[in-house]
Length: 287
Ligand code: ATR
Image (cartoon, rainbow, N blue to C red):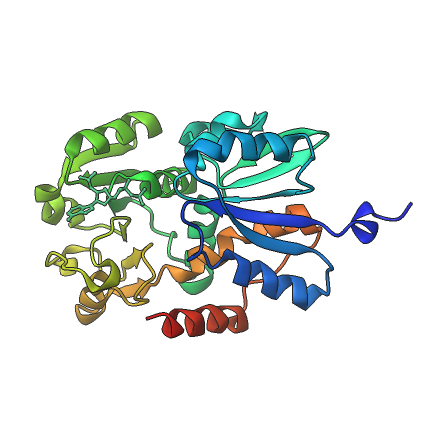
């Protein structure tokens, strides 16, 4: 029997509000062309009040979509509306990847996978020493990072946030290896750390950032930022100037897209220098 994908081109989507700045169509479009797949991946902007109806259309097949990505502000609702969220999505309370299976809407979250795979490929051996990680920020983007670092086996994960109560909530959610602290504790928590991750919007689009003394970290420690505009954020520039290894956040965006593409289109794509260059060129065009 021919694969139904050969007779009915698969359609996938990214939905958000707004969604026009999303680079996902560029990433998936590149892979579709590379494999010569006659499918499509389109950006569909859905305001919050219409999101449940959009998911309804996806579930009953009326929209003709096989699945897709979900971004801000729909990740929590997507998880709630899914029939079969996996364990990762359940613990996060948020989903970024949806697909239909036997008529049911399945949901997962590939942000943690993207984060880890980016570091595994750009800084091999980064988690060989995993005694202490420091994560700045306790917003939506921080959760998948905390979950991923815990699952990678970090012994202590310190989450620092301007609003300490949000850091405390996340420490409670992700278990005893998590420790919440205020921003003022940064220098102390950073001492001897193997990894520092910025998940806040600090430094995004060249905004102001605090001075951080990265020399307190373990020599050979790694600093990364999930913000990727600009590619070298002020936090990464500070760390680099202080002699630390750095990894930018663009790879996380590219790698988180891999499992979804494989699910919808049946081929596992690769994150290549060519794909990265394509996205970087687009970022430069829109500076
Ligand atoms: P996202 O879902 O993208 O993570 P968010 O939920 O709005 O976005 O979280 C943004 C993060 O950046 C939070 O950790 C926020 O700190 P608060 O929880 O205290 O708001 C942090 N953040 C944003 N602007 C900041 C600033 N000027 N100083 C310190 N932290 C800031």
